[in-house]
Length: 266
Length: 206
Image (cartoon, rainbow over all chains, first blue to last red; front, top):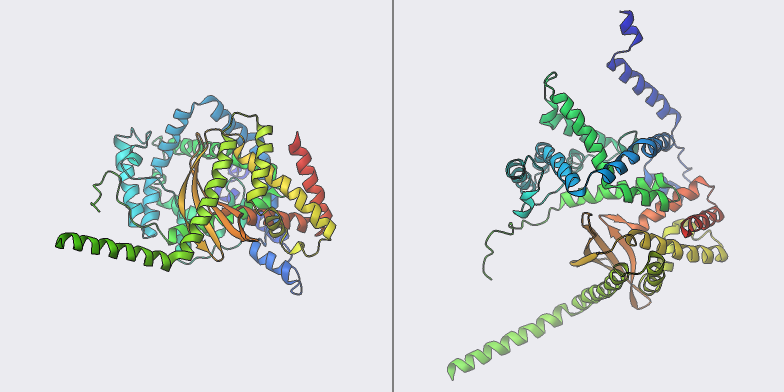
């Protein structure tokens, strides 16, 4: 019993963190400008960042963690591991997300994407050497990305206020809900404990984070160097990027036959 | 004879149809292809400089005149300052535009300068209000291809680039929100922004 008190259970720890975050959230609300200042009010509404002080705090925490840990790790990864191996690792990780991606494609009512994802998973998992080589692309099934946050957007769920979350980065309540749904939809998270597969999952998350960070090394450096207020710039980029993804999902490109299919004579 | 006559009739008819078709879609077609041709020249010039063997500093110097020729720098600068443009004095406006031009050049050469072997393909254009969005896909070595749309507007009777949209993110909207946020954090003082731009240019000069 004493032991349990000394080492709080994970549930209790989560509760403590949530409470602390909640207190911080309440303390750190941005003040809305007076209604008389129309321009400032418009800016405030466009930014939709009522938790800005809290978000900025987490941005600074994340930035420090990134500079001291994640970025050097990603740079080391790029320096030590040759490009073809990194591409292979990236392909394996991407292939493992196929079941979730398929579910997202279906919930977005996009049969072409769902078909692409299905064929990609079958082809790349087999002749693509457990996903190491993206053979399916050459067969006319190109890669695409999406997530359940986009599905929610198509279902009419608004993004909600801007959030900057530690270890996650720019986000929104809708994106958080989408991330939760994607985790639940991922069959690899249904694995029961004690089969060694849990370790595989953790390794997959770890490598996934480094792989993703490595892909954005120069872009993130560029924003940090060129922006006067990097936080506001990341916020704007995130919002615009999400909106354009939602728009692209709303108006899917017309069906194009795979390149190997015989084209009808004109 | 009969066959020949028929063939001639068909030829005449198709020629007439062509003329009619062009007359009908004439202005729109001319506008779209004008923006296309303009971006083609601009992008070809940019790519030629970027892929050249010169060192980075020389490339940057060569990019300057191309940017001033084809980009509506003062219009973009004004847009990026948003509602604060009206509150700036003429002297502040002039200094800001001058600094903005250098910042823009730094950004473009920063984005492209590190690469050689850059290539692009045109992907068609769509009208957007009075502007035309010209689509391109830019390929850089060892990087995924990026979709870039060039927003071409009519500025004083000639086509100019008024915005660049990379993967759905607009350069001028991002820049505007950066400046607005910086000004908000510094008591809406234009002088603070000008000082920050000076510092930024000093940092990147080395």
